[in-house]
Amino acid sequence: MPVQYLQWLLYLQLLLYCAVLKAGKVPSIIVFGDSTVDAGNNDYILTLAKSNFKPYGRDLDGGKPTGRFCNGRLATDFISEAFGLPPLVPAYLDPAYNIQQFASGVCFASAATGYDNATANVLSVIPLWKQLEYFKEYVGKLKSFQGEAKAQETLINALYVMSLGTNDFIENYFTLPDGRSSQFTVPEYEDFLLALSEGFVRDIYQLGARKLDLTGLPPMGCLPLERVTNRAAPGDCNKEYNKVAREFDMKLLGLVHKLNAELDGMEIVYGNVYDLLDDVVRNPASYGFENAVTGCCGTGLFEVSYICNKKTPITCDDANRYVFWDALHPTERMNHLISNYLMNTTLYVFL
Ligand SMILES: *[C@@H]1O[C@H](CO)[C@@H](O)[C@H](O)[C@H]1NC(C)=O
Ligand SMILES: *[C@@H]1O[C@H](CO)[C@@H](O)[C@H](O)[C@H]1NC(C)=O
Image (cartoon, rainbow, N blue to C red; front, side):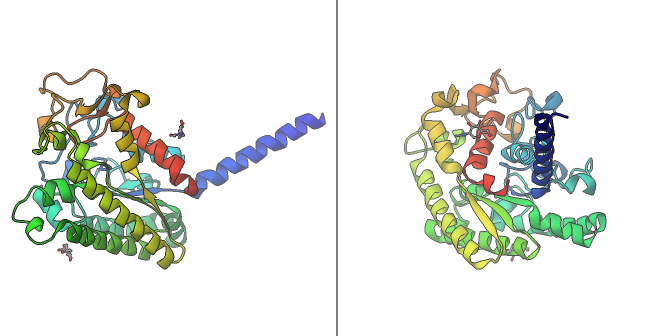
């Protein structure tokens, strides 16, 4: 056998070995949060915050509405794929899946929820404490399925994603006059939410989490619905909301540093979606988008959830040209960009 051929074989074996090692590094993705990452849990609860009907999911395999607030996949679906895991992260409450599938990825998120219980109450969705309860139940099932030692290994090596907080401001604080805004100033409310975020991270750490993406807030004042309802300058981004998002994100980054220092073996990365979305909204053409102002569904000004349905007229033909799918949520293409950006900037450390 020629030496070169042998070398080639060895090289191939090495590649294969690396691929196997890599595939085992993050065996699962475990997701908590709101509609940015809800894969369909709200389909199984009584709430108005749903999207399990057309045209939602129209660009998903077979045009299937799953309860994702998108025309296609979410950023967490793309992240899962980037780690060599399944292309869709299944919703924990979806009876079509069982622990065998959940062992490589599970989503506990619920659209319209927040860090604050009061936010989840607005549309009767799954509060964060309840997502933790579901996670504990899942840990039990995983241990029965994989055995104690293997399950512990899965939980320690899994990638955890938290993506929430926008609703605490836009659905709750800035919208309900007699609620949190009458109890807290904005900075106080930020601190209140951060304390809840910290408590949650400590809880999942106790249960085994060691790799975490703590996602910050987007420039929430530039969501189509927030532009429309911007009284100071209708149609423009709400500058106040963006300022709050930035402020919150800076504090969240501080929390990430603090927890990384305090929690032994924990590695938290801060998922910066603000800068990417801010740049996309300012320079949509440089990302290949034609519209960064209105959503694809309907007029794109206010349609979201039940108001975006198959009878909604003038939904755009090609969602890929839009940053936003409905009045609050990114298109699949934007979600893919978010995933690439997070993979390139922070999540690569877990590859
Ligand atoms: C949220 O609700 C749960 C369940 O009732 C409760 O245990 C928790 O203390 C509440 N959190 C806050 C911050 O009020
Ligand atoms: C990030 O990663 C994707 C795919 O992994 C790549 O196509 C892209 O060019 C990278 N860079 C940026 C800035 O997103």
